[in-house]
Length: 279
Image (cartoon, rainbow, N blue to C red):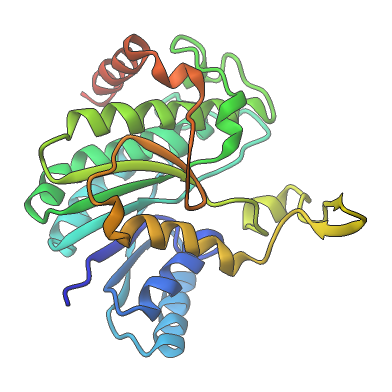
């Protein structure tokens, strides 16, 4: 049985690495993107040795600028013409305001603009390879985000935690709008929160040693990273989700987007403004 070719952005650590390994274990051709060549080569070699799958490779890609994302689209179109599943996993959690060379706040660039550029730039190729799926790694934190088209992209409303939530909310707006625009082309678009795990981002923030109590027992709030791959694997392969699009999932269960995502006018304004930024 044919198994779709998978591309995962940011596949050298955390959720991306765990996801790449699980797909490779199950016989998929897997491509990861990375900026660190030595790290990527080591990861690909390790996954190949662990799984016995020779169809694991990597592509260099920089998601921190518009030009870098556009160059990666060209590279993917050339090197992965049989792509059927795009997993926009790479993300950042910036607690200090940093603008990229294009003038965009870094959370917004990597967590929203990069998935937009890759998804729209690869849509026609994915349509040719249908059935295809696009998955955006999100978080339940987007529920408490607030997106302001005049403020958020440039970090005018920057907050150490708020800007991450706001960028993920922009990504949620994009998920629904893209799903609607791609209907009838054989591509589904969904977003999901994989849950709380010991990711590189959480380790960098010193947040992995948190616990909660329930029924007298103590549980770790952040679970081992291997389990983070279960949601993307299910959402990318489950036959029952073949026609499901424009939805948000918490792990493998349907969940609700933030109320602001239902604002069709805001979704369309963001879409049109993004096209203007990229022109």
